[in-house]
Length: 135
Image (cartoon, rainbow, N blue to C red; front, top):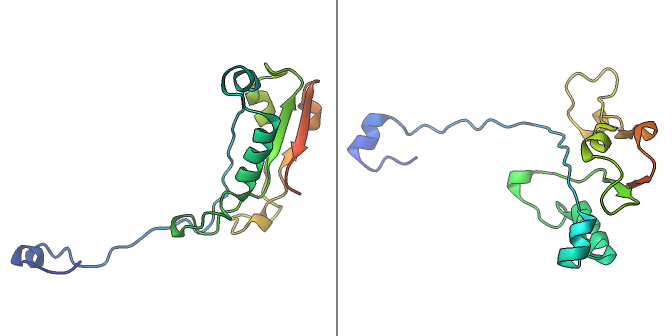
């Protein structure tokens, strides 16, 4: 901050501040597509759905920003229901996905410090297919 008046000089608010950062973070995002609303209201198609998956996978590669650092989508797990009204509540499906730190890692500093996301396939009800959109 530049001193431009005597009042600024008296306040002594001229020192550079500190910027606290989080050096690494792993974010988990959850979302929904309502097949029933898509069919009845918006005309959202299977082609639109594939475009959505592609956009999610590439969202940080196509929009770099200093505020987001080196963010990247590492996994995309999709639960496809046989019924357009769903075959299970979303919380049950999201609870089946776990992410754990590798053994011996106390403070993760990279994606490599985590095991791959695991899906407890045994807890997934009939009528639901698990799709992994990224290797």
